[in-house]
Image (cartoon, rainbow over all chains, first blue to last red; front, side, top):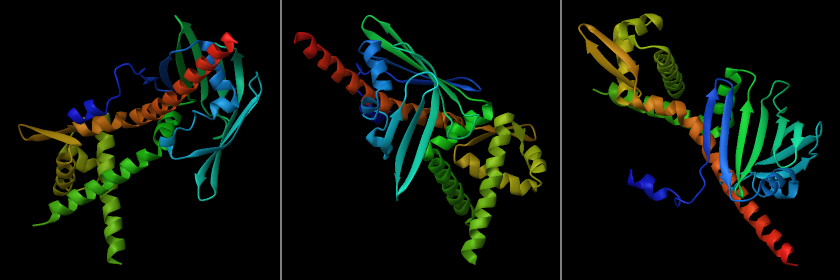
Length: 173
Length: 114
């Protein structure tokens, strides 16, 4: 319990929340201490976007980032996965309302990928950012949850190991 | 050869246990129900359930002659684990985004003075 408290950042830190609001929807929120105009810019200018989209803790890097931020325009992000492997994420913008709203498709997995909507709501010099992901089905969101987070696979791997270890120890006389 | 047999045995056990967890996610069940569902002997199922119980994934309660199994606290935590993982990813991203926004704000102030 203490360990959790100690590792918690200062109470001033803005909180990131994630909630599964329905079988097909996921909502992420965070407040930023700055006007919506600047937060929006950081989402739409590749040279700024590149600076935050891939935090060091992800253990990956971005090889390239192209964004044509207008309705019907496309984007393409290429990640370096190491061992000369890379992975591309791409889609197109469905809505672009400067400083307030961005909607795009995620087409790397085929035509029925999720649709992401980000809204920027300014209040008293701060911006509430709400990112909403709508998946085509419950199964798609379930799969995205377990699939995207590679570490989850690890968790299951560890679980299996634990079960096997416990099973083995129980098998002993 | 021995290793391979051990591995497949382990995988099979893991598959059954995972199946039991999925089943209990839908509804509580008695050991007899589970044994029938997975075409196993009562003794075999009891073993699997004890392993899951020891790991905190399942809890059991005996009422009369029936032992009812339900998901344990640890399994429930695991169901929300991927959401927490996702939250951590976005939290890390947004910490970086915050820095970018801070910098843009400072730059704007400087520009404003000029």
